[in-house]
Amino acid sequence: MTGMSFRSDIVHIGSLDMGGDLPVRVQSMTNTDTLDTASSVSQCIRIIEAGGELVRLTAQGIREAENLAVIKSDLRRAGFETPLCADIHFNPAAAELAARLVEKVRINPGNYADRRASFIRQELTESEYMVELERIRERLLPLIRICKEYGTAIRIGVNHGSLSDRIMTRYGNTPEGMAVSAIEFLRIFRSEGFSSLVVSMKSSDTRTMVESNRRLVRMMEEEGMHFPIHLGITEAGEGEDGRVISAAGIGTLLAEGIGDTVRVSLTEAPEREIPVAREIIRFVAGSQRRVKQPCRPLPFSETAVRYHPLVITENGGLFRDENGAEHTGKVKTFTAVEGSICNDDDPDFTGVLNPEFDEDDRDRLYIDASALLGRWFMARIPSGLCITNKGMLQGSVLRDLSFAILQATEARITRTRYISCPTCGRTKFNLEEAVRKVKAATSHLTGMKIAVMGCIVNGPGEMAGADFGYVGAGEGKVHIYRGTEAVLKNVPEEEALARLLEIIESDQARR
Image 1 (cartoon, helix red, strand yellow):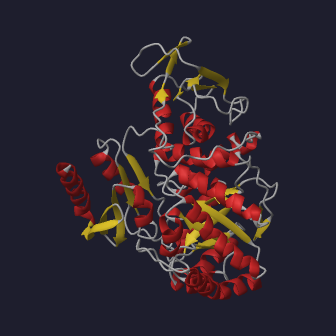
Image 2 (tube, one colour):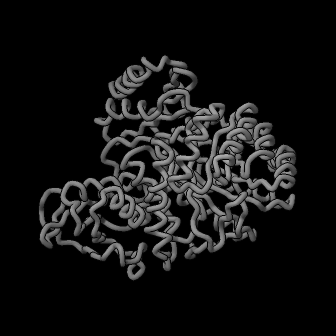
Image 3 (cartoon, one colour):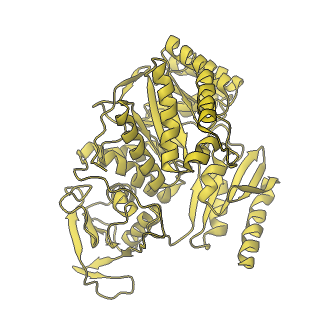
């Protein structure tokens, strides 16, 4: 695979331009009920004042799509010209209405015109496959005509968690399947002379997100396409874990010249996402760090690559391993703020990476270190990690950060991994509180992956790699999943955590 530095075309989204040599744009999404005008307007303003340059709102139905006009009008009267984006799943009618009202519409190829994933194989002959593509094209034509008339941009937003059965049967739930899903839609739009497009490849898994974007870039360039790319780790979670996994994935791609706009998806108030995104951009894109060596393809066959990177600590110039013994292997020390983000002078170095920081701010250190180091541990290259810091943050903070980066890149799993979405207007319960409760009750389950999701749009798919899932199913109701199977449905929220623990304990007792 050759080195990358993808240069996109410029796309106009209302008053906002993105792509080309323009700065990387930052955006977020409201988690209010779109029918609640006052709350939605207030949250939009908080996002904008935090530095958000585009705001997305869910429009799951016609009523929500209609109310986007009211929200937009109130924002404009308040003096805010920031463009709005309608987030659409399953409902072409809502997309066609929203496209007349806001500057951008996001559609998901996995559920817009294609049939919703049921995780059942859909074997199609080549002619049957082409018939399905023609059916999708016909379903997209009304939206394309409306967007042309109103000057509305489209984001083709592919989620690892919601690929169609048609795609998964032929390509698997894989980076290749994600890229193909987007390219099919891009071809349809381009054949109709429509180019106001942005495209995204999102996953809760950093490696899948990185590799799917690399494949997308390669496929677009082969077909002469240069549409702007939106970056994000979906269902990143909250707190330091959410910041580490987001920075590792987004930072890796920005360092390769891929990415024109960013959203950090945290299970927190959406305005808190903005400073995280800005710090990733500042550290990577803002410092002109770009990969000069070829990208290393990510190994997805775990049986083919045995990998167990060590966490090394340093004190007074002496390096020690996890047992406290002196580490005598190769260590590459470099100044993080001045050194290359890709370690260009020795891209195949297999010893211990030792970046030196000079940082007193914990959030900034976690974000910068993750953006710097994520790509190497996703590619399974170094044998270990030792983070050193001249600032106030020392000792266990640096050790915990090292383990967090290895966990986020799935290079080494040492604790429970939580997948949780950032919530939106589809969420019908307090997801932040649910995440805290599930974490408190399950954090002892080392190596287990548990998903806590606000709704069923991406829940089952993003949980394909999770052991268990806790998914909002309606007002005060929760579905409990084992993998992609809903083993309990519509459990009252006050009982849901206890039922989840019962299933986990029962499964463990049978092993």
